[in-house]
Image (cartoon, rainbow, N blue to C red; front, side, top):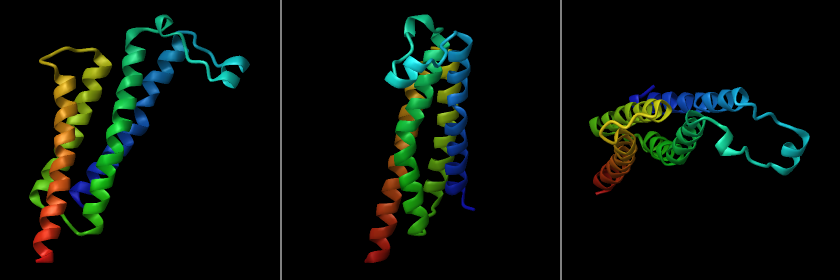
Length: 142
């Protein structure tokens, strides 16, 4: 398995696990699923939940937003047999950036705006992989 596909697998596992702190936090704060909330899909009163519970939810949702584009470029790179040093490094950096984002978000840390920077770095990694796919595809087509 390529580094790119391994990075996609690790990111999928992270995405799968990131909802757990949110659900645990909801249960611990007494947000039980009643018949009424089940039918109406009424959201939990955010003022009744600790800050870390809301941060856990946002960490999960934020990765959901980036997972689609990341998965798309990794799968396209794999299908088109594009695996370069740049794609491998970008995929690895993406995983590290997303792990850092999750840790900073869950911990509520404000250190040099690490959350925003790690999200931005992950987005740049997606763009690097997309650029490499286009570059290699165009180069081999000529």
